[in-house]
Length: 335
Figure (tube, rainbow, N blue to C red):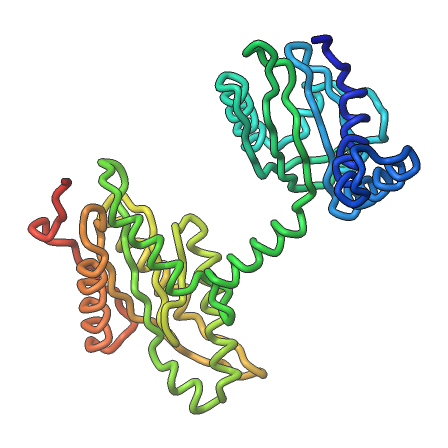
């Protein structure tokens, strides 16, 4: 069989698709030229509306052929020269690596793949595209890889927004309790011989008095400012979360108990500074219960130790840090 050129193959695809659409509607084995042209126009308009285009890459020459919509996705003029290495360079590093891996495997296995990839277009726009691909062979020799590329940027943004809403505390902008628990379980599951994690449970001292004296709006602003200060001084933390009304949880990598105490001291100092509200100074402090060394322990056991340390700090009058270490007898043994 003669090898059809990439451009003629793609040019004929929409016609063949239109014929396929037209036959059932017309009840004839083939549609007239006018009917095919009409259906082809519908196909092209639908492609533009859905922001989806057809592409192919001849093998082994790697000559590319695209429909106009794929050019538009990459912010290139339709019909302009396509150089595959230059096109591949438009993918972000992570997407480029995954594309290469999946493409090589598909060619080797005579199969296909699907991938959501991020590109930086010729005009510098960041865009997400969904690639579907299939390898065509003759006598078990791959001769082309082809498929569809669709703009999914809006979908990706929406999904990311939904994920942020699901993982973020609306008031403070910090991680919420659900997200904290995911990160906490991961930290406890680690069995690395390197740095450990320290869990800090932070509870604000005198917060109820702020609400009673200045109102709940002032209390909300106090929580927001607390979140800002925590994010500023703990930029290396694995997670900073608001897990209750005036209670926060922090996971931070740390190599020693002394290091954990140093970080805890910095938290107390930062949050002991007065808050300003309508020209008035609002003074609140924090009590902290901490546990150094979470790896290999059950999350509920680590949290219980930190919680006891926190309430011991509250009983001492607040404004202090109490740090504990886990008892190795509680460590979960590897299966």
